[in-house]
Length: 93
Image (cartoon, rainbow, N blue to C red):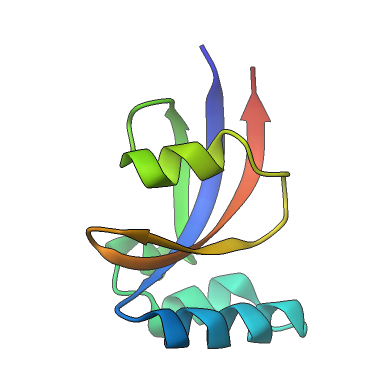
């Protein structure tokens, strides 16, 4: 079974999501920005979601997590919860 570890940051609108992505690309800490801005409880842990298998997250999330390059910030990814930035930190096939 394929498993992945990822971290994410969840905000209400796409503009904020894009702004935070730019800040991360310019060297700011993903974890710190997640703690400050993410509306998901995982924000307290720097956005860390731990390890999970395919199908455990919403489909839009799953699709990115199981196809994106590792350690590269993806997004904005829109789900019913809002807009996510996500980064796959590990994946085992």
